[in-house]
Length: 284
Image (cartoon, rainbow, N blue to C red):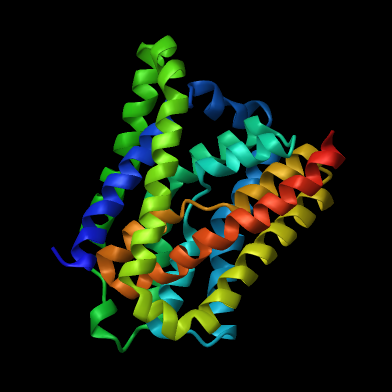
């Protein structure tokens, strides 16, 4: 089996495990919280579902990325929050409940928003590239199968056997983290030629996306008079994406699309970790 074929197989399996572990941590209360305390969730989701992909568009043009890398950059920006954001928010003494709610809702919305921005980016950056002309129907179905299905399975287990779900959730998260690390390493190895050729441009581009998304979203939250804990949760959610989803969807189209998300997957832990350390003292 060629490396690219192995990646294509490994990515959906890894995402299935990651989304299942997220489902184990979710209850209906996480979704009802939007009705009870809508302001933080609405502002956070606005940043996550609109601000982040638009920043991806702008930075792809600013850094002059090739068509495939530009589409991958937008796909990265359009990916939902990751489960690691919940852990980092907790470590930063931010509003963990808000973080979980944003991760859950953005993961559900990803079935619509991810293919939407993928299609827009492909039409804008790769209009003349036949290899990046998309048949969105099969892509939407695949996204549904690797996101909502495992998420629903995890939530169903949590609802029917809460004690069992709580017992295996820490183990599931460790397995999910292990698969995430394995995926990033595998993609870096598989696409080392593409990454090596473009790292000087892709690295600064994804780092700029990470830092700007966290900074702007934090300032928007503060301007909306959200407290420090809520603003922390929103900023970290914008910094720590579900890059496995971005890579899995990108791999459905072309190998080069996974490169921005793979490189971002390295940077995000450093920047978000530093931010969490700073906010830990303030929120304490």
